[in-house]
Length: 214
Picture 1 (tube, one colour):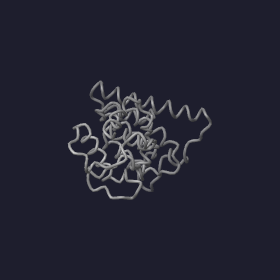
Picture 2 (picture 1 turned 180 degrees about the vertical axis):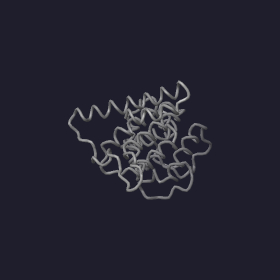
Picture 3 (picture 1 turned 90 degrees about the vertical axis):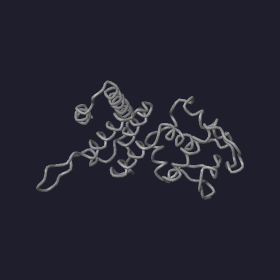
Picture 4 (picture 1 turned 60 degrees about the vertical axis):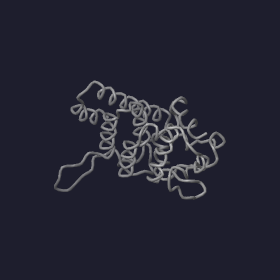
């Protein structure tokens, strides 16, 4: 972790970038330490070992490459609330035996692409009490508040990325087809949930979804 943050430090040009990377480091470090103290083993050792290449310079470990990518994502996270989620991502990746490094890098790229609010939506859908949202789509909803329209479009983008689908296997061809009571995370949406744990954000950060989807 020290080696990776040292490499990234040279690319930090502002105080806010330094603070974001520093916060990400501390969050990841503390979470990893907690799990190790609880007796949980790290993932396979090969993830943390330098990789040998014949007639070429050895490559860094997959763990160090992923950590540098995580720090750079934190550096560029102008939505600073994403920094805690990125710290959790790396801490959980260090124990995620079932997800290889290439897949982890893809999930990190998705985390960078999505807004903080979209990640929160994934967290909500991963633990959703369906009685708290409407059980019909928006086809006959008439004029909608701009706040609701914004949440619908953010949700629909994640449908297009195959992160969210409908429990009835119905097609969601547009925002009006979204039925909040039938939404579920799938595929990499589930990986984002398990690695970033956006369900743990403060409750006040989730209210926008329930107000839009009531």
